[in-house]
Image (cartoon, helix red, strand yellow):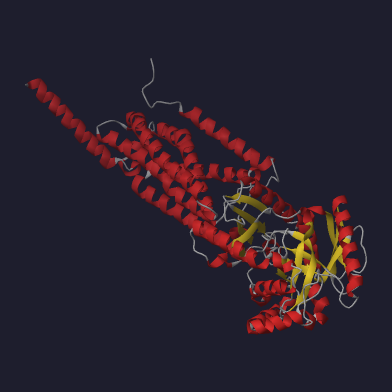
Length: 606
């Protein structure tokens, strides 16, 4: 004969739960580092998090292949920092970089550099862009005609515009600007509306407009009048190469066209207020002759000829041939122009001129990029060039740094909030359910005992980090877990009101409560999954912990709560009115049973 519905073997279910617990804690203590500590997010342990949004030249969505390639390259750069626990993950069209610790904030913010390296011949420069732009505004058409006939021609390759001659003494200064650590893509997008469609369209227009002027073919024209007019129009777009100039072309210039670009700001110089106000020089450059894909390796070292550091570059065989051909051409041009006006080659990184040394002889083999580099800047640039350029440019959407002290305070606050919430639920349940409240509190403890090792193991296996939003999700899940037990207990009270004993009420109540618990938890799980799919950043952590806790809640209800309640149904102590919390309910049940008997007796008497 089959047992009544809802009847189970409680010890078997409890043994299964105990086995699950042993396996989980065995994995925690005997795999990985063996430490029962979850992997914490930067808001709990301190560190730096940078969210990068991909930009494409035409404003379209980046391909998944490009995003994966960019993530892999950035991950190599992160590994180059030598920091344990750093992560690079894809989040839709965003790349999220998380670096623990407080000493790596600046390095983390430089990881988004596109690192698009190109070697371009210098057509004109260095010169003061503000002076050239101002001169162009003040000249009339007649002045331009006189200038074209005068000795200010910029038509021949290697010559500088008028203002470039005035700044001729600053040529070395222009070529000694060190590679900075400014992140790529922080352009005018920051002021654009939040609508993605508008943002993509605006990006497309900005890049197209900048290319039309600053990469015009007349910049390399042999007609002096056309070239000078093109240079003046392009220089106006540079905004005087101000320190805060947001370049929409950064990492998006076309290599087959000439380019007007600013020299790269020196972070070392920019540390002082006076240096921050120092104007940058500008250059007119030819098309790219050699690009970063032809760099075989790069290292940093002390500059033996000057103060500071340099970046040493070794080319591939193809790159070495092109470099030798380019320097031979420029060396010949230097002889024709004279040593006072030598030909130059520009090292262009992300549309900014890092260095523009003069070339007086053919160079074969490796070369070096010199400038006002600090040791850290030279090392970072060498690492970036070693691993290659990113296939996309990125805008820094969000960057936050959290000190370890603040992270510890946040963790302490989260734990205190969790304990307070758990204590309030326990007190309420003890007050309202009494002995049944003890079972509810025990079930909450069992749930926490299962959730904790799962979070630790997820941190080891898939890199899940528990952040402040995740702690909030765990606190919310206390209420979700308590709801399942309350549903079950109220169903038991309904059965007792109908005149049944506690022992007979438990299996009947379980059959009815089980459907309600499954339905309620299914709704929470669906909401958590949808939120996790649609959300970004830390909201995902909240959705994940809520969903995880809800799923484990079902495990505890089926393997612990119901078996314990079946065992408790046989306890005589539950018949104690003062301790069971079922006194009034039992009175209602006895009254209901008496009424049924009376109705039955009346019916028989009739």
